[in-house]
Length: 449
Image (tube, rainbow, N blue to C red):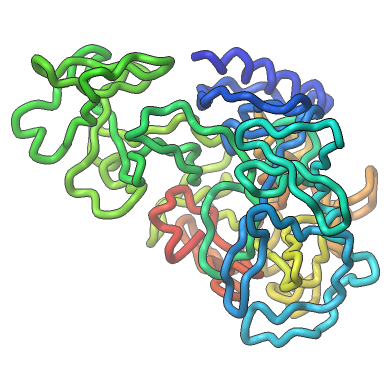
């Protein structure tokens, strides 16, 4: 594959940049459509979000598309950047039942939107190229935009390829208006699309139905014939379809062509009723398809079956949880990472008491010297009294596992493998300020994760 060598070298370079904190993990990565870019920009194939646009230093570019929430809209419209140097000190009242006007936590040190999301400025000499345009800001400066959306970087991203600022994975209706990485189009035929899900970058039809492969097939011949076709429909290709990169076509019968991806013929499942279903992949011999898979969890972590699907768990089988938080201010700054105010988390899991919170949702401890094979998972040091990153050698600090730079947790009342009693704990089912189980399948995320 054309991008595999680049990615392996990229991951190895990250290992050196991070001081050897983790080893390179070799995985097949997603290809993308090459198109002209202005000078100073590039594409990086990232671990979690596939190909993304980045600036000259490798910082991922993000957009903030407008989203309707309970009492209004937040985010940005096309060609109208609003992220500025205003420091908001009170909540906006956008999330009922809370009215606006309450003082925000740690207001004396609260940053502005631009401090957390630096704008990608354009110079007087810069010229638009294709979907890359230049928009006017209210402060009189020029800013780069892609497909009309103003571009920003994130202070959470530390090395090239990080996408800790946001995700393209779709969240629930009460979630904040998260920032999203901006990316080139995936290199797939027009009949297909690629979607960010828990397990990686998911290949489906252009409208979202799952595609599958069959173990009995070969690179040049489909074994799904006869009664098999009552349950599975081949992804047929046009007469003039041609092979390109990972994509090829086989002839099922004279004049009837079928798409293959990475030397495997593709099908849809006739019984699938919902988009991005995993149900066909539960049938022996059949598999969902990914352009790239999620990086491996740390060694010793386990997968557990629960009453509502599969979750990631620790070595003892106890479910892992992710904390979600976005404050109710106009600029919707995230409060889900150790750099942000911890008052929200302490309130929701401990009534404001850090000691109670740390018992209700204790951190997942990383063993001394623990290493990760990727940047998705990293061990970090946390001061449990403040919830902030600990200083080197700080007394009482905990060495814990973090996913996307955010600590992961257990739930104190989970007693056995498969318990998920802490799921949807918090405000708005854990979307706005609370905890969600680390679900591994998106078809369980309507009630969890």
